[in-house]
Length: 320
Image (cartoon, rainbow, N blue to C red):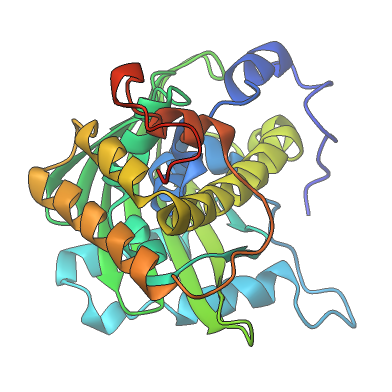
């Protein structure tokens, strides 16, 4: 294994790295969402730990986890051209990363809706004012993404089952971290499972594996640049995104009318998807109406985005 510099403090690109990766209280780049991590991974997921030979006595080393993730990709079910692209990445991986598994209190139908419609999630962030990311649906499960900081990418969900998504992204980074534009391709495997608790509430567990191939950038340089700082940022953003989806689910239980108002502000998604979002929030409200809501994890930025105009505000103490 290449010996990596701990963190970015000793990296010659440290100032640019910190400026572009650590902006508090903002959803940074597309690494903030499951599918979006794949979109941006071609540019910022270089933080992945490098693969080395399995040391003795380790049952779940990076090599083992990588092989496990590869087995989830049904190559035989992919179109010939896409199968070739996916195979090229996983057979010539520059860096591989498995993000920490995340679990959140969340109604499963809403979780899957937002996982399948990341353009809705990104539009919500833009309405909230916490992200400059744009994600436009080109056709079907194909998207075009830009983060406003030099990254653009084309992404496609190439396989979907009730519990697994396989995502392919081809991206370009043209920003301060490198002296010239850098292109890369990424395959991401997103797994999610739902469990109903004895209390009647649901828990959603999500895990994301990323395989990244980068053109014309040495692995050792990638390790020195991104081993610590960006890796922790990616992990944090994935955790925060899963948590945010849970906040939307809980808000659907307590303030569905507020989410209706929010849907009306989503100007980068098709009317049909806005209506589907409204329908799924109503579904959650009815489904969990008699299930006690535990905890008080309100997302203040989301709550503010749901507030009605002053002239429409309900009397104090009235149901939202």
